[in-house]
Amino acid sequence: MHVSNHRHSRIVLAIGGLIAAITPLGAIPRPPFELRDNAPEQLVIEVISVKVEHDSTALEVEAQAKIIDVAKSEGRLKAGQSISIRYTTYPQARSLGTCTTPQMPVLIKNRQYKAYLTKVSNETFAPAAGWLSFDGS
Image (tube, rainbow, N blue to C red; front, side):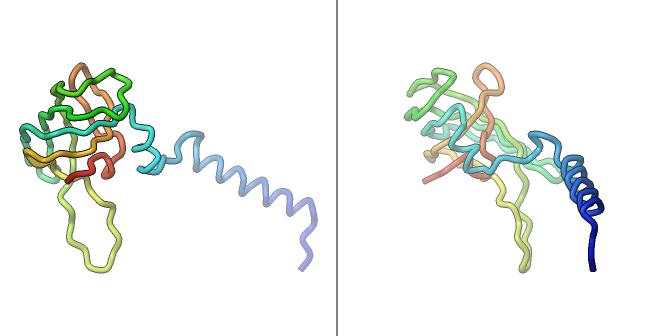
């Protein structure tokens, strides 16, 4: 089967236009590892308290934490400061033989974590890298 160059060009342009329409500039999500590496606040924290509110399908987590060490801080945070961390997570659904996206853990009181955060307001922070935002011991 012979396809003319003109028809081939139209097919390529149509496919290119379809891709451009489906994927607007900047809409491609960044991988969590990249988000973690680029997080504005990279800290070691110790969780002082945790409050979890159960919604019908979600868990609203609010934790108070003390900063133990600072690897990077655009907000000029210092060791010894206290911060609030708020986020929503979802219970991990049991699945048989299917892949699921890992969910953010619920932080545990008195545990230390490497935390990758972004500032939401004055002293409130949120996870910057999805399920990779907290690396706990």
